[in-house]
Length: 479
Length: 96
Image (tube, rainbow over all chains, first blue to last red; front, side):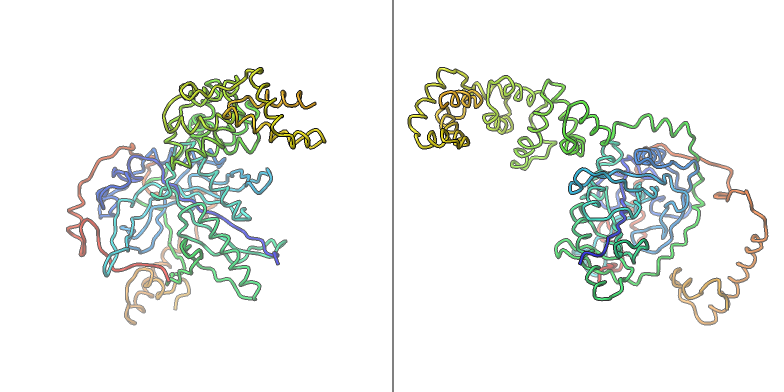
């Protein structure tokens, strides 16, 4: 059945983190009153002149360099003409044939790939202004327009059609977002529209080099939605092709509630945007020196940080990936190590117990009350055998809930590990006497039966016995 | 008459309605204009970089600073339809 290969390309619009709009001095602040952040320029009134925000270009260059694209020496803007009420000028200032960045790539490594990396090409990334926002919900006989977003600087990052599965698409987006967050060029907040994604997908018979007819999917509000919409669309197109139908080149909207894509069937005027050079903006040249200055100022990026974590801390590729995909998480880990924590121990505890405990309490990682120093302190107690790892699992949530250090909790609750060999030997003897069956099993070769006996000793000591010592004592006594 | 453009789709793109006689006149005019501009096609432009702007200026930037314009009320006042601080337009929804 599975004889078709999906071909996927993604267009990501990212809002660049400037204070003012791309061509005027209006604020870019989210959540302002409707139309409060507007002026004659972004409203497109006659006689006004747009002027490029230098920070917008600088941020675009940062992204371009991080994605290994070539920064154009000469940059110009163009008008993309169409009528829509969210577009006050009836054209959008964008870039057509001379974008800021072209020909780059991003390395992906989906979880399902078994560690195999793949390069996804970046066709281009260009600067443009955002449009306004239309509101339909609850509006009687019409739509409302808020132009606060009109003129917000966007960078549209277009991938090559190199993506072959919804999982690869998801991984590409996750890694792209991580890069953008590392660069601090955007807050990448999808709910607020700072990061948006459209997907193009077509199918072709496996082994075929020609592309099939592509469908564009819009209204993708999360990376999971992108993945689900692509899955749906691949199934839909496969079925259609198997029944001998032709795929219509069209735009479809993802409906998250219904879990399907729906044809827009709008009277599209066969996209004729009549691009022409924007006469209100002069061209721009960027010198090699300027490009190099931006390149030198780039921070460490996720890929480099991952390799460093593997090399310096001996983490597995997978663990390092998880830590670096979230900038804050990676920094937290590194600070724990700086505070003296064992790297592997810290990595395990952060990924499982800490994230788990925060999750249970509906806390985001930003709200994590345990400082790196305090987590390192807790891990030190485990390492120097003051408490067992098992007790550690009880202490960590208390550190969140009671906002105390592990030291304080261990002292208050008297959780110090029992390492008193004499005491443990006494308990072991009692447990052996009371459980002849498991003892017999162990002696007849079922060595896993020792687990039950260890458990009994743990129970007697309320989990405070040092498991290593207990094991040694039991083995000695039963041999 | 002309194969270089389709007057109906041009009118459609410009959102204007044309009468039959207007179409004929505009088709004629536009053909003449295109013919006039086509004279440029006779030039040898090898090695010449395309002009993107006529002004001899480049790199005109503004610093990333916010200056509130405070014109919302003025602009909304001139809008044919408003509701609160929103502009109001005929229902535009692309969905099927």
